[in-house]
Amino acid sequence: MEEAIIKLNEITKRYDDHYAVDHLSLSIRKGEIFGLLGPNGAGKTTSILMMLGLSEPTSGTVQVAGIDSTKYPIEVKRKVGYLPDNVGFYPDMTGMENLLYTASLNGIQKIEAIERANTLLEKVGLTEAAKKKTGQYSRGMKQRLGLADVLMKGPEIIILDEPTLGIDPEGVRDFLHLIRNLNQNENLTVLLCSHHLHQVQQVCDRVGIFVDGKLLAYGDLDQLVKRLFKHESVVIHVAASPIDESLLNQLKTIEQVKNVDVIQEDRLDIYCREDASATISKLIVESGSNLYHLYKKHFGLDEIYHRYFEGREANEAG
Image (cartoon, rainbow, N blue to C red):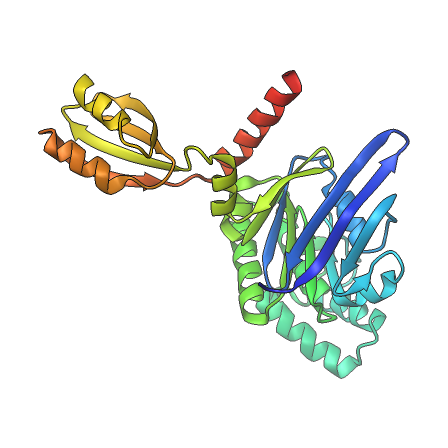
């Protein structure tokens, strides 16, 4: 197993009687893209501020790159690049000038800074806009410049807080592609905080579902599906004809089958504890029905996310 580069152990942030973050424990592996998924106000940004040492936890411990963020926040900032949801630049300075200013704040010599800035501007697709004042940049251009800006100091980890807000669909696609390339080519660890399910699913290796300051679950999609849909973790879609009552009853007797849902007169969704595709197809053919197609359906983050909320709301109602 890869070593953890971010370790949160039972961290809380309490304001009077309200927990903005409630006993959060989480390990993020070196070199992965981890998505912290939750609605606005869930506590994602508060958690980030504690990781960066910009806010002190009420209780619990935070380690980033082996450093205690509460005790040694400056050392952590040398290792981490942070892109907030609303990045700001000096509008009367060009993109290049803003990057060189960041380099000077980080003690990078001018010749090296210029070389690094040119390389990063090319990576984020802003070479032609390098001499343009950032006050004239679009939202998407500012986010890409922001990414170049956090990479100027060569961080081991980058934390992105709602980085695609206000960007058009094409810009979002380009930005996520850029994140994936940086992760793969430079082994950067990325923590992506967002409330956009499909964006997180596109780019993240693992996901944590975070609501009301609590981490409800985390893992890759397969792990979340198995944990959440443990009695029906495989859904097999079948198109066959005819489908009569006798066939339905036979399908329900298969040991792995939990439920059979009739979608149309010739289409079924069969919920199973484990993959029973071979048994199902054999039974359908031997019954005399024509089997047109059979495939396993995959749960996406949308189903996972909403199922967690359904379970949570049911528990609260009870």
